[in-house]
Length: 317
Image (cartoon, rainbow, N blue to C red; front, side):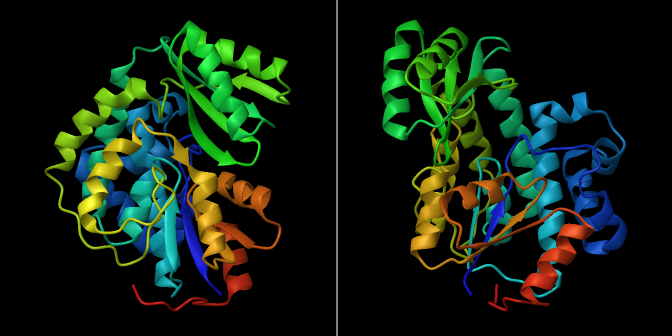
């Protein structure tokens, strides 16, 4: 058995996420407390008892998802489960770095709070937009973006799985891309309820600000192989980490290619760690042969344990 741990991205957040794990595992509760100390926000109060509007603010969402994901990861780790490879969707790549021991958790929490702030500040609300295009292939979406760019910036943002690609850019150009997509056979082309055009060239300035923050953060050699969004390939050394995280802000997320790389390298078991099971769905769209699990609460944790056996993968980290 070869196992990949996948970490959730922005959009999966819900009020109450991680509460059950914190009530049952000290290591999860301690993770939330460490995040609170790192950024000066009571994470338990905000995530367990707060309101959706506050949690939806990008500079809150990003540290919240990272915290919940690492709390769940540490519970899984404490039971003896180890990944052979890790990856994360967008924001989730920071969780993957913490799991791979290449970045300290507290540093990552501080970084993603600033990442969220810079991404939101770069493009005023209402100027940028994103849309999901379903049932067209990558070549068709590239062609649509090229044609729609007559109305402004629009670029492929996320290649999630076969037939699910998101685009990002200026609002009018994205809306026009949706029109073209429908004309060219898309099953659906819908504007997404997001506050900024993530993963497109409009966010290059946010990446530059993030780079200054990253320069102050130590990174270590990866203890577990990590496949990065930007290249859909393994990070070769710690010297690449910061540049890839800077580029990731304004680059397309090559998640489908990342999953296919893992499958080609023999991964047969995927465990999504963090809120939701969106990434499980992406895996299932690519292959019906893999074992797919997720961990976000006690029920899903027990299901994963039952399926894989206590400490099912004992690779050392």
